[in-house]
Amino acid sequence: MLIKKCAAELAGTFAMVFVGTGAAIINETTGGSVTQMGISIAFGLIVLIVILVLGHISGSHINPAVTVALAVNRHFPWTSVFPYIVSQLTGAVLASYILKLLFPLSVFLGSTLPAGSVLQSFLLEILLSFLLMLTILVIIQKLSAYKVINAAIIGAIVLLEAYFAGPICGASMNPARSFGPALVSNNLQHLWVYLTAPFIGMLLAGIIFNPFKK
Image 1 (cartoon, rainbow, N blue to C red):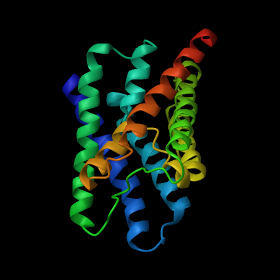
Image 2: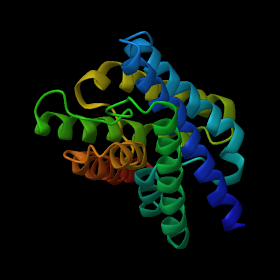
Image 3: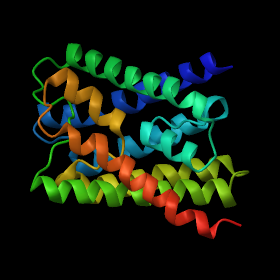
Image 4: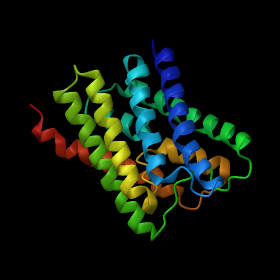
């Protein structure tokens, strides 16, 4: 049932934003106690857990760019794309509002912002999203029966990319993850980077992966 799947996407995206950006907020408000590694681990583990707990219901996309890329590659029905994206964005915004209530002094609420040039972050987000989507497509094609392994691999690549690229571009790879904190904290100046680059990177992954499907 689509309503149940959308509820799972809302809950999964909520959990991802609440835990992941929550770690970033606590790091911000405590002067770095969580560390970049801690933030990366938080994102990787919550993605792993959401996939294991909710994946059997909705697939645990928890990412509008993943949803669209899967639809383009015929792994997901187009009729469900819009409801999924609305659910994901809603979950992200709800999580950010709750974090705002819990940490009213946070300036950024875990927003993804370029540390260097905007072009640098834009290109990095495309490449990071490309690698994440390529991993997802390979898993669907080759490892679809191994749920725990799949979740661990996806969680691991999210952790890895967040760790090495997070200090530069935020390593969002997810329009919903960036949309919620940016909207609630009113840090909208570079949001376009994180709303467009993940779609570009993930669609490119689908285009390149298609000829290698067997």
